Amino acid sequence: MADGIPFVRKLDFEYGKPDRVTPLIRRVVARNPSSFTFYGTGTYIIGAPGRDLAVIDPGPLHDDHVEALLAAVEGETVSHILITHTHIDHSPAAAPFKAATGAPTYGYGPHGSGKHLPHMRFMEGGDHDFEPDHVLRHGDVIAGDGWTFDAVHTPGHTSNHICFALREETALFSGDHVMGWSTSVISPPDGDMKDYLDALEHLLTRDDAIYWPTHGPPITDPKTHVRALITHRQEREAAILGAIAEGLDRIPDIVDKLYHDVPRNLHPAAGHSVLAHLIDLVGRGTVACDGEPSVDTSFVLGASGA
Image (tube, rainbow, N blue to C red):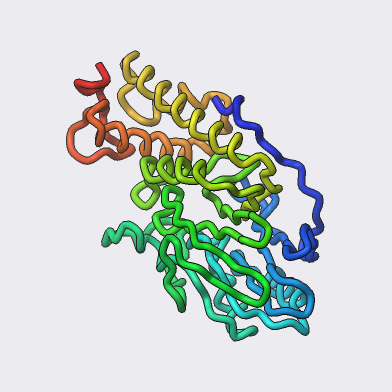
């Protein structure tokens, strides 16, 4: 179902070594590869030689990665630490990196702060310790020594997800909202399919020339890629409705049908994305269920989906 997405997966790098990818951008990749992080977390260092730097997504709490980042900025001044969102592969290293450099942190807020649900603190995979020194909102400007970022709130993958648009290179650091190697997991309750799709539509109104995701290589034709992601989600929604029409009323059965070519260990994550679609469909009246939508709920077509 993702055949129409122009995935880009080739990335030349060496773990722990800073790679200057543009005049203003260096990248250091953490050694935390997985089914969800691809090669690992790519931490970006922004700034010209001899000028103050910003660092985006210091990454996981791995000593070797923190040491690699500190080695990469040795003799330089880090003035800002920017966080796209609070998953454990993105923000935990901000604490030791801040302690070593003295740079303040910037982000939307703690994990789940875009939803404000009381149980959000217990979500698996969230960095529940991070709180930014400076809270950002959509449209805020972060200016430094030769670089300027606009904060672009892109909820969906998480409610506190922010992309950072670098004016000097017409580039967008897209975190996990848009990646070139894979689609993003949308996992309720913090993940929200409607928010995700609305945020993708907003990106189509922008004129960014290139995206730098936190995982994988850059995306050099952003609008084509974003349109393909939207189409993919529309096709997934249609497939879910088709499965329910066939009598598959529970998420595990829908996942078995729609993700039959995906390794079984990834089915739980796929189930969360299916749930995100179903929550959206229930909200629109296209699908109905008893009680709150969950992975254990039975779903039927609603009046507008019959």
